[in-house]
Length: 209
Ligand code: PRP
Ligand code: URA
Image (cartoon, rainbow, N blue to C red; front, top):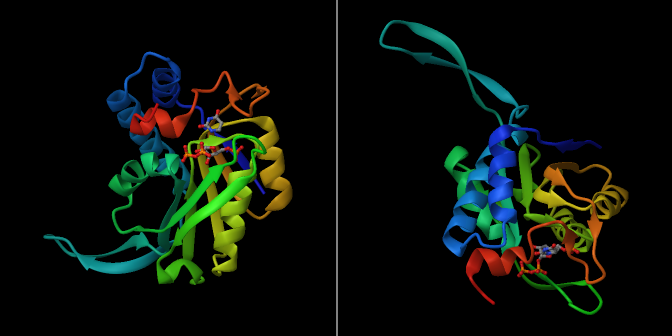
């Protein structure tokens, strides 16, 4: 399916803010949320609409409202940093959670938590799996495996910074999932970090380390 790399002056500017090593925890979190909001605007632009008849103070009129349910699934921890920004735009979205961390030696994802709203399996639900970083792709592939097992059908993966290998791995494992990224960086380094990247996103968001 498709890979969309967003090109927007505000996204580029805010990405530079979070890439700077001197950006503090508060500013890092705020910028991640703001970028997530801009990303939500792009990801939702083709969401289905249904007709409704309403009454303005002037007359009756046929208008449109969202014709789908939305479930946001952050991959813990770093994905949590994107949730508020998306919920600001889509306040009716429900939120599920997947706890995964990368084993620092093998880089393999390890699952430690899962909780989803019931409507994740509904035909008209669009699931936004969110994680700022798509590095090897292992965490995204494992997270999407987990939500497909719960019956999710329409899935979009949203990240801030992707490595080419992560995109390739995710596309191979889940060709039906559309990928949205704010930037595609050069490569991974020898310990699996994205280059130039922004460092350890979870630690920078939550002030650990
Ligand atoms: C980071 C990031 C992704 C994962 C990406 O999480 O938030 O979930 O690494 O790497 P991958 O594509 O190689 O799997 P991390 O494991 O550091 O956990 P944390 O969010 O709890 O810090
Ligand atoms: N996880 C991160 O937080 N940063 C990276 O560069 C790669 C994985």
